[in-house]
Amino acid sequence: MKTPEVRELSIKDLRERIETEKTNYVRLKTNHAISPIEDTSKLSKARKDIARMLTVLSQKEKEEIN
Image (cartoon, rainbow, N blue to C red; front, side, top):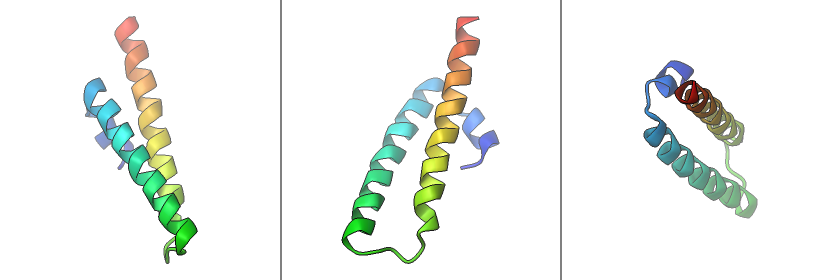
């Protein structure tokens, strides 16, 4: 998910999406530990997407306070 797409989401939607992505990341990581996946870049992409969403969430929460 690209940054402009993430910025369009509301704070509530971002929180829900982050939880979903974290669950998917854990599942992907577990599956990779059991039987290696072909495209290991999916792991780093998922991690970066989560970090991107957390960053935007933090920014939006700070804007809401001010």
